Image (tube, rainbow, N blue to C red; front, side, top):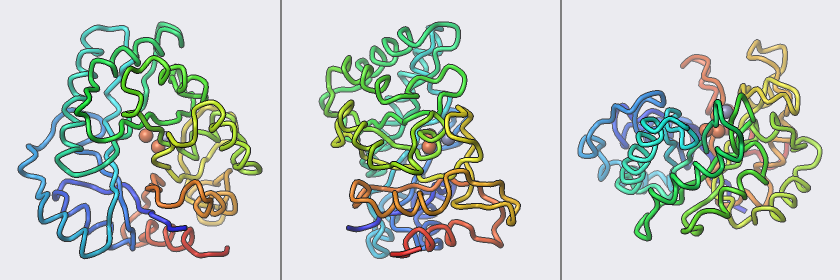
Length: 288
Ligand code: FE
Ligand code: FE
Ligand code: ZN
């Protein structure tokens, strides 16, 4: 059992800056957006200080990092211009992920907006089939979604219906988000083992590549998607975590998570508290 855990960090100072930030939290992996999550403006790859970053990462035992695609990529969009942008930008992000040397790019499947879930599933698969080639290196990891608005990927069945339509299925992975699965209705608090068994029977657990470890401000099934700090209670003013430390600690120490990147996307309060360092330390402890 080995725990690979770290937060999402900024790449504004290049890969080397991201790695240094991760080390300051005692992390041994991390996740980055290749630029602002909300837009498509990106620094050229040459400016990301990649080689130096890799040397530093090796020296500090950081590995198996993750890239997250920006939210504006909506492969379920019925608007042709947005669908085309989603495909071309995802293809570029995959190239950046390769250049950075990350094995995974996490993508939100998409939102069907004015259409329906069947339309969304078909459109997402069509888009991915155009983007993926047999040369694609990183796993494109579809994220389990909370089911906010018209998000596709709220259930394991929806994700599997997308995968079924993909030609190059071995290029596809899943990113399991604890906040999202809780918000979409899965009982990861009392029965994470059952949830994983259900995942295995519908999708197959070999598809699980990345985990997002987050608390949730909402009750199970709320379909809201608002992350809480790990085990946050009323006393610390960060908003109550409805999932709770005990369940999140159990998940982090579960066999299914061993050697897979576990990424914190918990709220950042301020630099003085260094919450990521605190959260990583408490989740790493063998017992709670
Ligand atoms: Fe995400
Ligand atoms: Fe997430
Ligand atoms: Zn979320």
